[in-house]
Structures are given as structure tokens and as C-alpha cells.
Length: 171
Image 1 (spheres, helix red, strand yellow):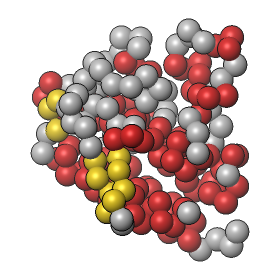
Image 2: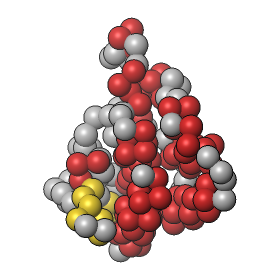
Image 3: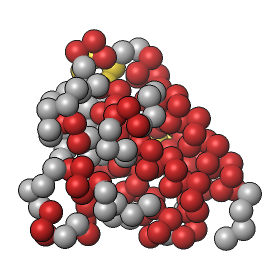
């Protein structure tokens, strides 16, 4: 359920990434398979592609979770890579499938930016999420890095506000 997802997984994972980024570590391969839940404790796993903020982002990772700038030669910021990948991971965990799953075959092989324009906000697929979560997830998935959250702390703060608003709404 959404409450358990937020309390047991999303907020602790965001806190873990705030800590990693403050210490200069970029994960580089965030995806659902690299976030585990053991009982009520979440764990970030698989640091095989981790780099430091000084090195910038990794040039590896899992297609479908990498930001668009990875594919068309834009400036690669490690923190932006992790923010995009975590937003995509949360999308998959909240909705139950990857947003690119429903992309028309005509777009296969096209730049990720064209795909992102077709991503439906999570509440369009799960009405009980409400639009508050949409704002958070879609900001993290913004095509241009400068349009995304600039830090994990900003991501976490906005996510926490969205959750508080969500808790007050009757569904």
C-alpha cells in the first residue's frame, strides 16, 4: 500500500541518498532491483557503478532508468543522474510498471526525450495516488536536468510535503 511504501521505503531511501550525496558518492544504477525491503527496513544495494561527485555521473547504468542526457551527450551530473533514476524507480514502485512499457513501437530507437513526453503522471494510472505525488515524480523525471530537483534533499522535502497532503485527502 502507499502508506507502507512511503514510510518504510521511499523516505528512508531518500534519506540514504541524501547521506550518500553529502559524502560525495553517486550510486549510478538506481532501479527497483537495487532497493530492497527487509521487514520494515529498506536497503540500497549494488554499488558496482558508484562514483564520486567529483568524477561526475557514471556512464553505465540500466537503460530505462538513466536520464536523457546520458544518451545524447549532454552534461552529466552524478546527482542529477541519481535523482532521475530514483524518480523513475519510485514511478515503477508506485504504479506497478515502467512508464516506457506502453510506448508505441514507432518511438523505439528515438531519443528518451520523445518517450518522456508520453509518460503519464502516476495518478492517471492509480487515482488513489493523487496529483501531489505527480508533481514530485514528474519533476524528478524532467527532460532537462535544470528542471529537476537540484539535490536529493530538495527531492525528499517535496516528497514529504506531497505525502502530508496525500494523508489528509479522502480517497
